[in-house]
Each structure stands twice: as structure tokens, then as C-alpha cells.
Image: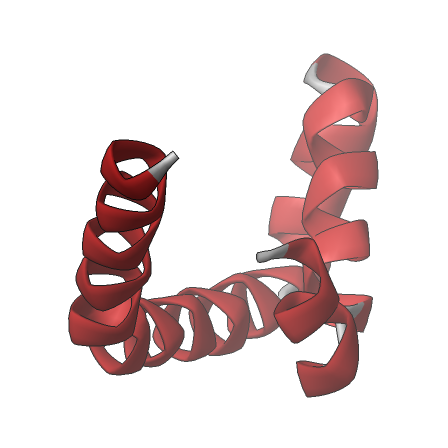
Length: 72
């Protein structure tokens, strides 16, 4: 049981070390995808050729900080 607790504590420490950087990356990605979807030509292309990507990109842009924290 002590070994399991030690492994869990190491896992938590690892997550805490990378959380800030991961959050920053996700924020930048969300903004970039939002700008892409602000371009009508890009949206039209995705809708015609890759509708599954368009739906996922739209979902990404709608994520709130609270939802991102729950997913982790």
C-alpha cells in the first residue's frame, strides 16, 4: 500500500509540473483554431472535404477553461 501511495504521489507531482505549460499550449491551440474557423474559405474547404475535422475544431473552440480542467 505504501508503494502504491508513493507511485500516486509521483504521478501527481509530474502532473503538477507540466500543468501550466499544457494549459498554455491548449490556450494557444484554441485561439489558433478559432482564427482558422474565422476564415470562410477554410470553413468551406473543411465542410466539403473534411467535415469530421470541422466538427472537432468547432468543439475545441467552444471549450471553456472549466471544461478543460474537468477533462484532466
